[in-house]
Length: 196
Image 1: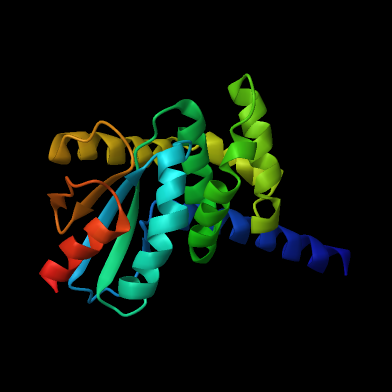
Image 2 (image 1 turned 180 degrees about the vertical axis):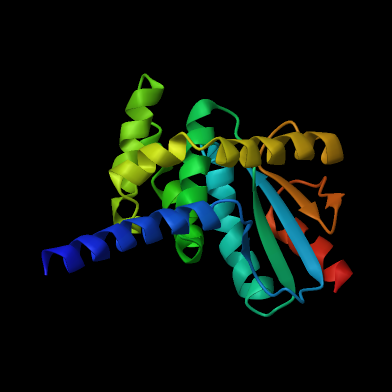
């Protein structure tokens, strides 16, 4: 009996690591693959303007265009500091089906987890916030050290600079064209409606 339990534990722990290893580099998206309009939002998880976009504009986009199949949104990484980079790493290591919920959570609690005088303080705050998203402390620490996750995130930033000359967040790209207007819902809506 002890041997069976041991085998089960080894299998379960490996399965959990397998989930981290295989989910981490996929894009964070919401919407239909067949959507006519694609929006790419480049964000830094410590950016207060990104948090406002996520709280005020994204829900309206979701209701009016994502849930109706017109638009697919891609949340792309553009970390502006080490805390944002680490939060992005953890976001990539959360199980794929929970990533949007965790992204919501990071923005809702941004003012709390970014508090701290050192990156170690902020990492400890982040560690507390992931518990309800089924990421263990061990996996949290492992995730922060994964070089391919870090490269994926930093390459997203490099590509944004090369392709779209992005230097601040949040930045919206609609069907591969930089959205230059003031980032308000009424302006986004006008741009989207022209493409429908």
